[in-house]
Length: 137
Ligand code: ATP
Ligand code: MG
Image (cartoon, rainbow, N blue to C red):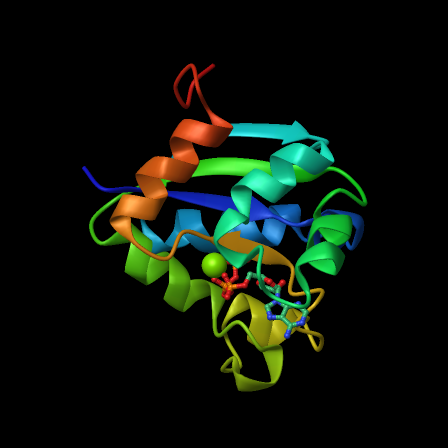
């Protein structure tokens, strides 16, 4: 069954959105296969967002991700990668539809609450990076 990697970013944790976000994925019908509450090191955040290392906002993005604890999760279900991205909403919160997580809770692209894998292939890669011993470890 398809799996995706979802991370509640530090602003989502600090603002008390963990329960609401988990609830949205649960109520949709997806299965939580792994979850950990953790602080990430700079080098790890750089690895997670390595594809964006040439972007002008890369350093700021890394500082954001390491600014507080995050919730790293593996979710499973039919078409969970694409559907997860639809639940999350567009990258830029002003383009995210109301009813999506970013549409409901964010105004800044640099503090947009949550991450979701953008393809099945990247989902596998990210799950391997964040849960090297498997989702339940
Ligand atoms: P994510 O990978 O976090 O799920 P995304 O796939 O919607 O987000 P990406 O293009 O992968 O979008 O960008 C990764 C993250 O980098 C964004 O979620 C956002 O936090 C940050 N970001 C993107 N563009 C900008 C920007 N112009 N200024 C500041 N931060 C940005
Ligand atoms: Mg992305």
